[in-house]
Structure formats: C-alpha cells, structure tokens
Image 1 (tube, one colour):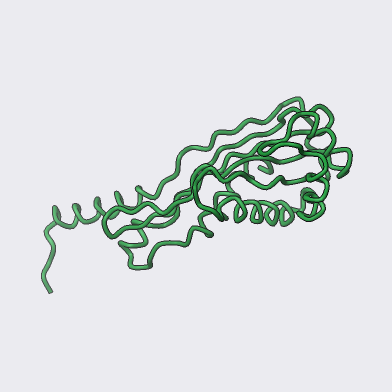
Image 2 (cartoon, rainbow, N blue to C red):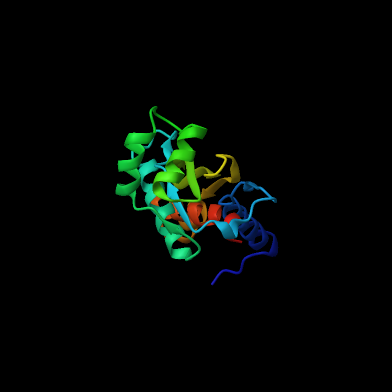
Length: 192
C-alpha cells in the first residue's frame, strides 16, 4: 500500500473539512416580545404559508410540517386546517396576510390566543457540478389575537446535506427533510 506524505494527507483532510463546512447554515434572525406571556398561549391557528420560492408545493409542505411540529411539542393545541379554512373564508377578505382586524376576528371565532403567519422564501436544490444541496428559508410571525401585534418572529435558513453527503457517497437529502429541519430549528427559538 502506498503511504501518503503528510502534506498530501493534510490537503485531503482540509478539503474534506471544507466540504463539510459548505453545508453550514445562515444565522437565525429572531424576535421575541419580552413583555408577552407565552404561557397565555394554549391554542394557535397556522395560516397557510405563502410560497415566495416558486416551488408550488413549498408553502403547503412547510405549513403541514409546522402544524405537526407544533402539535408534537405538546406546548400548544393547533386549529385543524379545515376549521381554519372555513373561518378564514368568511373573515379574511383579501389574498395574502390577514389585516389586524382580521387577526382579531380569527382569534375570536377560532378561540385562539395567537395566529402564525409566514412564508417560504426559498425552497430549492442548488447544484454545483455533481453536488446538490437542498436549501429552505422560512419566515414566521406569531401574532397575538387581543391586539394583533407580533410577539415572536423568526427567519431561518437550513441547508441540507449535499457536499459532505456526496463526498461520503450517501447522496443528497430530499427537500422535505430539509424543510422539516428548517421548521424544527425555527421553532427552537420559540420553545427554547
């Protein structure tokens, strides 16, 4: 067996660590209103997330995962999507984000203390040569339903396995797995 010289071995190690480092994520931007008592929030409604990424399923995929992760946390109850849609069809007049008055009315009719709104701003698989890296960015806001003001907001970007997976021969992760990780990391700032 041929023995590698120390400089060649070091170069291979540095290249491998560089590839692993390429899968890093941007820092999460978050806001939490320090005057708001989150213990007051027992039930929330999650509005369908807007798709600003151009991936026709990104908003639906992220919304469903967000609802599941909220329920799995055990911290809050979540209005079923069908119930939310029935009320939203009567209350929310325009497309896009609900107005302050609409948030207050959603709170009253759905008996929720908060409404979560947001968007998927990026959902794509970036390619560089033979390497594919899924990338998802979520922007979420929790609005309390007594005044309609934001009490929590987060923007998080998650990069899935790509360069490191290719280097190790395991293949790239699916966009749905990256979306799930992005939702989990975004919620970490809410639940700690």
